[in-house]
Image (cartoon, helix red, strand yellow):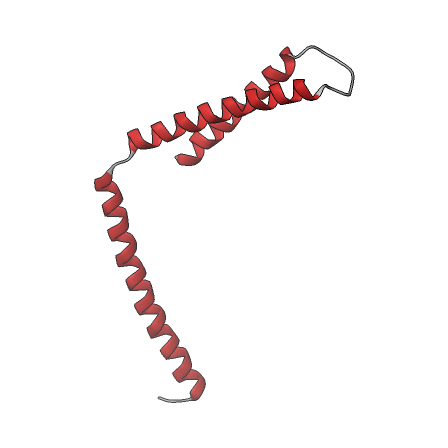
Length: 100
């Protein structure tokens, strides 16, 4: 679900970038450094606004209870995988050594 927000944010920034580029007067290939600076500052401003909005959305949808459940499930599953990986490794070593 988080990737959808990043994709939407990327598309919005892309559209805004093209909009800024489209509103600039058409000049020669060599643009003045002042114009490039203005465009860069404008795009950085859009980026900061989007980043702030994304951070506010994250803070608004953050659920501490769900976070705790995810951490608990992760710790239990990694403990189980570690145990079974150890058992599997011991079985493979005993098979290779020929011990019964």
